Amino acid sequence: MNILTDSQHPLINKRPLILRTATTAQTLPASRRPEGHQSTHPLLRVGVAVLSLFSAMPLMASPVQLFSTGNPDGKVATLSGTNAAGVETETADDFILGQAAWVTNATFVGLLPTGTSLSNITGVDIELYHVFPLDSGPADGRVLTRTNSPSDNAFQSFDSNSLSFSAKVLNPTFTASNSVVNGINAKPDQFTGGEGAVTGEEVEFDITFMTPFFVDATDHDFFRPEVSLSDGDFLWLSAPKPTGVSGTALQFPGGPTTDLQTWIRNEGLSPDWSRVGTDITAQGPFNASFSLSGSPVPEPSTLVLLGSGLVGMAGAVRRRLTRS
Image (tube, rainbow, N blue to C red; front, side, top):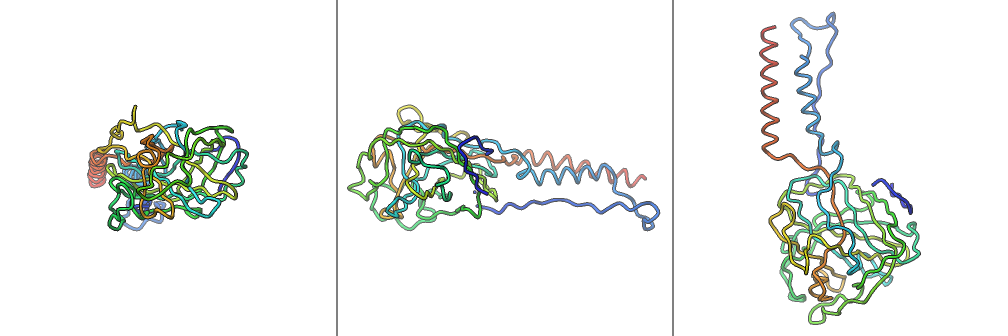
């Protein structure tokens, strides 16, 4: 169910999430046990319970923040949806977690036209892209570069059948100093400088993925939200992190690669992408405001320790049962 209110609310698939649980046979009363039958030893039941709990951890653990670009900085707002003329525009920003994790939730922040009711939101879609040249054809030379851009095609998509969302107004009046809505062109006309300041309602979208998606520690991907409105455009707001002062690229927390900034394309430019800050406005690079949350996957060393402990427990149980 999608919940849309103006007040506080409760709060993607590379690999399928499979819940593995261990079961035990029911212990029969002594009068009904077959000859030679022994009831399940208490320590063995504890071991089985521990295994069941550990296998279910990705679903049971409370989500923790895995990645964030920070709050909107008011520098730029970019179209991420279908405009009034029916032209779809996509904005994508990259992420790397630096740890293996199941992603269960996401947030992103953008602008709705001033005075727009949240009931005008008709849908939210999320797409994930690898970094070019994966999932792509050869570069066609229509943009300045495809290095570090999103791929031609998404590798994972979520819609109303695979996510739920809520929305809340953070600020009824928020201004971004520049915007990119229509001026998205192939070279040599890629630089437009943007389309000027824009003011609207600052709205946060909170996403829950019905089936979590897995991200490996070194995976580097792009996140692209799209908001559909019955009237008007949704503009995704920029954010300051993880790009540092004066646009200096920083290492992602725990990750081996640097920030790849925000890219944008419309149907006329597709399958290519342009950099919002570097190519179009010459004011960036920019990031877009979003976060990812979920459940980190334990390191292999942790799994080894747990496995060793359970093996030791099983051995102790076997010896005790043998003596009895």
